[in-house]
Length: 385
Image 1 (cartoon, one colour):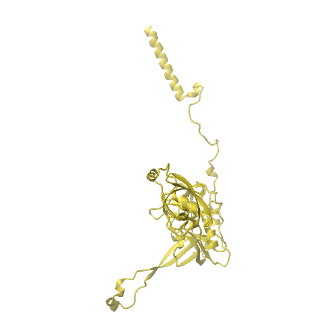
Image 2: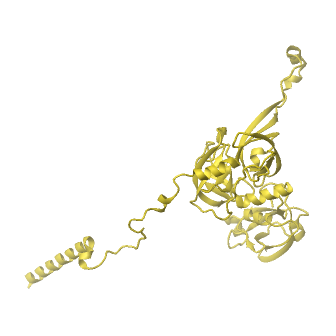
Image 3: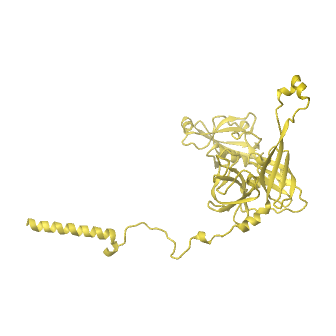
């Protein structure tokens, strides 16, 4: 009996081993498919979509290049007078002639012709405080330029030149047509070497909280942007303008593949206000806002860190007249949620001065709506609103 049981157990063991090997290596022999997850695959013989893209972006560059200009600026810098120049003994030996107490500083950048009438859009930091501005067209012609207006909060400025004939204005792209991954071309005058085109993709959209400008909504791209590209064009593969190159992230001064452009959805409204009025008008309520940290949220008994903590209220300003106090938590503007102080600034700035608006506040443990009249935003530090 024992011998029969031993033979039976050995047979079962061998059978189980054979089934395991077949199930692992040849499951189809057992009449069932292997247990794998479902995968999406292209149809046999299909080519990847990227192979159908353009071989060259020459047509896009050819269309946009004539609209991008070089900007050269000059300004006089006052040099402090050395005390020895007023010493009589020094003058006795070296005479009354003194060296020039000022020196000339030059800069360069780029710009984009946005109107045949000679209006050029560029960065404010390219032309800020310049005593002389010269614009060189794609064909080499040069003209003196004047500043129509500037907006430091968005780092945009509008110039105008008198060319005596219509200029090749760039074509604007649709403001909402960009996607992450789209190919873009950056055109400008990097390091003063001359007009240059670089290619990359849109790495991200809506970049903000970078501390570059007061109002930020950047397109991030890995197209090479270097000093001198500022104010130049970021165009799509059809040669249409989608942004104004503005800044780079770099520890060396050169491109590291992280560049930022101001999208035309923001730039166009500012440009039109400057051309029409010479300045940009934004809403303001006269408060200083602070971000709500987890520690502050705990001390104020808040369920989350959403909102803007009112740290200060300008006396006599719109918020002060409406009864807003330091310590209030502003959570929405005109029904739109406020996750942080920067969003609060953006929402209020978009309102028209003189307009009545409603903001929602949390004061201690009470929620309330406050009606106030929007004021006109003055030039001030980035943390104020």
